[in-house]
Length: 294
Image (cartoon, rainbow, N blue to C red; front, side):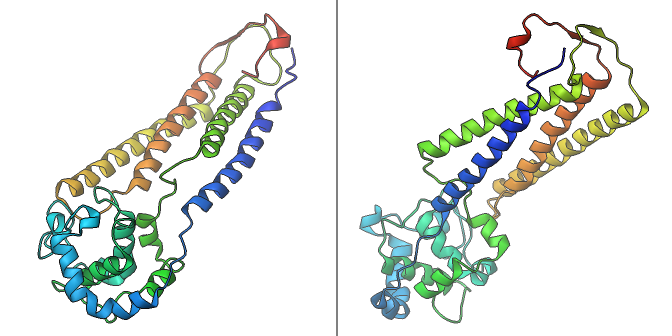
């Protein structure tokens, strides 16, 4: 019996790709940096504010922010505590805009203060950190530098600073992401079925015999799954050790996700190879008009 719907998996995958492009466009709009307003009054007061106002915000907090003081987590001398160490941090000096982004948007256990502190207080406390405890930059951080830094960011810093998924995912994004997963699942299962069983289905039991190439492919696939499993566990241990030591190091989520995905893919490939070359199959046809591709 020849399949009349073997082409549908490709249609599903193409539709999923189109929806993926639309989804990326929506995410890009959500994660695009907001324009930085350069207030002349803030610029004029930055140099004189950070030694006094900045110190006050850092050590005592502000009533509008719930009187939360930065020193409570980072220490009065920036020595660290519940929060990472700030004193003598070369990373902050190389990218002063980064500390502004963290104060405004928050990160990890640190809350966002963008709507709680005024622009004057934000620049004051950011510059206080950038000019204290061994930290020192040539010029105070200004709104103009923040605006420029949003378009000219070092890739390593951008990896840690940016967020691919917006904090508040709206219904259209949820619908598209779900439908993409459904279409991809349908398409991949259909393509696998055609590859494993052929375009023509013949009712009955089909005996298979593994070839040397199939055996080698199975061995390589299983070895790769073990290798990626070891790499995944190793990366998790490294990230956990950094977290336990309270080091200001971001976990390498990209590596963790890549290794985990490769484990799943290599195991799926092993199952597919087993089904195609090592397992006897049986085709039962009851109602040809209602068959799915698999």
